[in-house]
Image 1: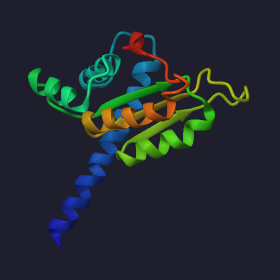
Image 2: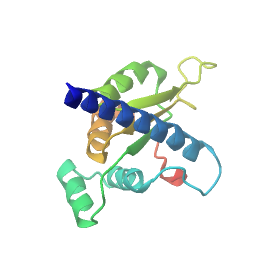
Image 3: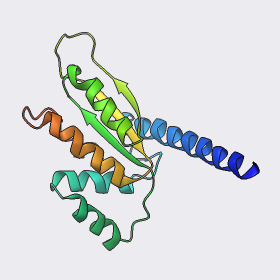
Image 4: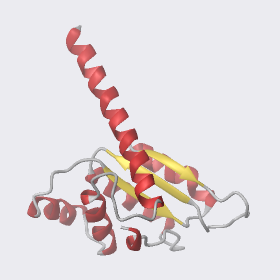
Length: 150
């Protein structure tokens, strides 16, 4: 019985840590400051792989090659169509991610300023999530490159 409680406490602690990571990831991207409030190593590597259209295997090889300790990873999606927000959230949840959604409600059908910040326990889930999201946006190229923010 004690073993079960310890496992439950571990999951609660991990969830709270992931939530803290997400909150600080959002602040890091929103505040015009060079100081990162979270370790952005895997998030930046994820973005580099997205920009280079790497496969999942290439991404895993790069993690191993650079000897990067995998950990919490943030994903930022920007300027997508509001009608896709529920689909994007479902994909994030599919990979056990948590999210912060900020939509522009002032303009119907606007893609401007729609943002989703997501956090994952590891970078592989974040990468798989992005690839799935990219599939729903592939035809209309709605996800904007945000590498300039990192």
